Structures are given as structure tokens and as C-alpha cells.
Image (cartoon, rainbow, N blue to C red):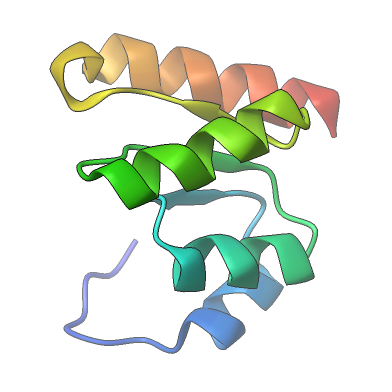
Length: 84
């Protein structure tokens, strides 16, 4: 894994197995367009609303910031990747 300041989401989504995002419309739309399961960690009302819709449709998982741990993230990743 390499951390860089900016990498185009459209390019990343073509190489990724899943998306971990904040639930913003741009991040979620790119993941949906590329048929990626998503783990959203929303920090605003709009992000949580987007994330709730994705969870209800069975397209991803949501972890609220207060519930975010290495274990909760690992469990969500495993659950989503097991479905692929």
C-alpha cells in the first residue's frame, strides 16, 4: 500500500475490491458505478443518509465513527469480500 496526496477515484475503483469511504456522494457514486461493495464511515448527516441507503440496498456496511476499531473494520471487510 502506498499513501499519496491525491489519486483519482475513478482509477482507484477500477483496481479495488471494495471502497472504504466517508459516505459522500462522489465517493459512493464512484463505488456504485464500479460495482464495488462499500464500507462507509459517515461524519455528517448527508453522509450518513447516503450510507444508510447503501446499507438498506445490501451494497455495503456502515461503521459509525464511535464504533470504528481495527476489529470492526476488519470484520466488515471480511464480510463484504466473502460475498464477492
